[in-house]
Image 1 (cartoon, helix red, strand yellow):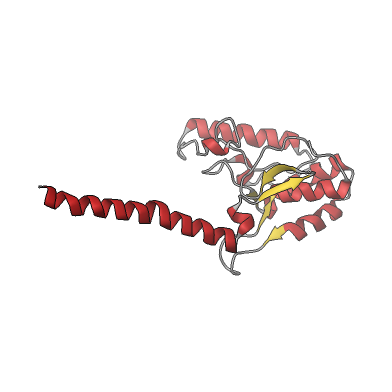
Image 2 (image 1 turned 90 degrees about the horizontal axis):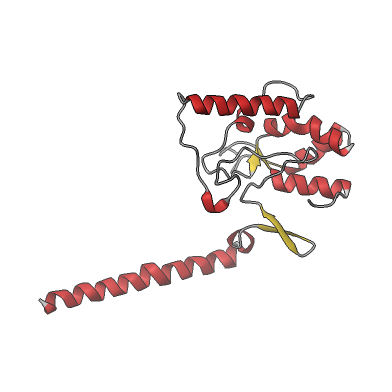
Amino acid sequence: MIRELKPALLLLLVMTLLTGLAYPLAMTGIAQALFPAQAGGSLIERDGRVVGSLLLAQRFERPEYFHPRPSLAGAGYNAAASGASNLGPTSVRLAADVAARVEALRVENPNAHGAVPAELATASASGLDPHLSPAGIEYQLPRVARARGLPETRIRELVAAHTQGRDLGFLGEPRINVLALNLALDDLTAAAWP
């Protein structure tokens, strides 16, 4: 019996060292060497302190900031509790939540044009999407311009400068990182970070 057990235990030990230690260390090293910012969490610092990550949405509630998608991650925008509501399209609760968000968006953005973009009324699967579509930004633009005392055309220029195109020219949709745009707005207006 020991003769059969010895090779099995040896293989277990070798595979544990290879797949549990060597491979993760190698991938971490390669990531740190080739993509140091992304491997470090794409953190953004201002005045020596971390204010966020380009990879995770965070709460913005003041009128002078663009707001991200709603989050159901924990108490909202909690990376440790990432997840969706798991409510289906026939859920009465989901319909009520979306209707309440639409009404709140209309009140908050009285000068917005057109229908409320779906992404502003529905939470993402992770609850931490850092991007909005150009339509999601455009809907909020009049409110942000008014709150900052800036012409809408100037903010549209900033939005255009922060719009990321499709990956490889055909994958995904154009998008804007909300945190990066809000920080650029702060730089533009020299507003203090909250």
